[in-house]
Structure formats: C-alpha cells, structure tokens
Amino acid sequence: MQRFRDKVVLVTGAGGGIGQASASRIAAEGGAVYCVDLNPAAVEAAVAAIRAEGGRASGRVCDISREDAVRDCVAACVAEYGSLYALVNMAGLLRFDDTQQLTLAQWQQVIDVNLTGTMLLCREVIPHLLLSKGSIVNAASTAALSGLPCGVAYSASKGGVLAMTRSIAIEYAKRGVTANCVAPGR
Figure 1 (cartoon, rainbow, N blue to C red):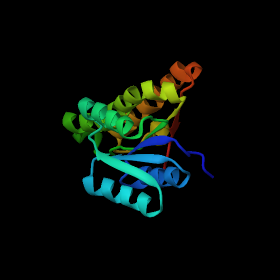
Figure 2 (cartoon, one colour):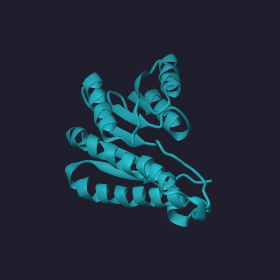
Figure 3 (cartoon, rainbow, N blue to C red):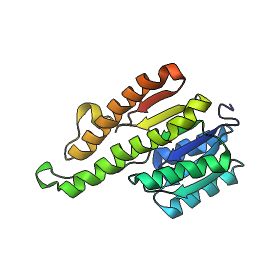
Figure 4 (cartoon, helix red, strand yellow):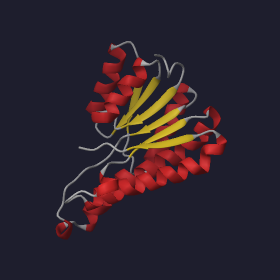
C-alpha cells in the first residue's frame, strides 16, 4: 500500500514508541516523514532507520512546549519539503505522582507538553493542511476516559487533547481538514 505517496507527514514523538512506529509505517507507505523529538539521538536513529529501509525522512529536535520552537519546526518542515499533508502528534509526557504530592511545576510540565504542545502544533500546521486538505492525528489516552491513579496531570492533559481534537474536527471539517484522536491504553 502506498497511501502516503508524495505526501509529507510531520510526526512528533518519532524517537520512540507509537511515534516511531507511525513514522516507519508512513515512510513504508511512500510518505516523506519529518521526525520530531526532544531527544537528538532518537531523532537521528529514527531518520536513519527509515532511510535504511529506503524511505524519505529528515528530522528536527524540538521542545513542543515552546511556541517559538514549534513555529520554527513547522516552518523548517515546509521549507524542506514544500508542503505538509498531515500531523501525527504522538509526543507526550507520562508521570505518576500522588495527587497530594504533585507540585505545580510538575503539573505544568505535563500540561505544557501534552496539551499546550499539541495545540501549538495543530495551530501551526492548520494553514498548510487547509491547502493540502490534510489530516491531524492526536494522541489522547484511555486515561482521558477512565482516569489513572497517580496520573491526575496526565489524565487531565489527555482529556484536554480529546476535547480539543473534537473542536478542531468540527471547526475545520467543512474546509477539508480532518482531526482525529487515538486513545492508547494498557
């Protein structure tokens, strides 16, 4: 199958887990993949693995919780490939903290990466996806639906991602952009 032939897909969290698997599959199906992760070695390894299989890939280190970094990342992707068809938002931070012990800084870090970072990427890619009639796939979690002991920040962030994705889907459906959420669980 070549569902992504001649299409450019930006994948966050491409250095491991579901993000890495998504990047590999997209490349195997003909897509050019822009691999994004916070870990430089992981970005390099993901790009090298895709290229070793004959796929097209490049990458960038990006802290998705920083607005300027996200803006620069999306601009660099479009500058390199000339277009953007899809965003696969798999970057995230999972931490377990007893709710009574959770500090505001710990809470904010999870919200900044999981919720704000997801929003920033969606916001920055939408102008490009309007041109390509493209797609967004965001990562929520079953924790958004059923809660997670010692995961109040994570559950809240993923619940926000779920609600945000629904809003984006409704807002942009008539303009040709789709937005969906996956909710991986245990």
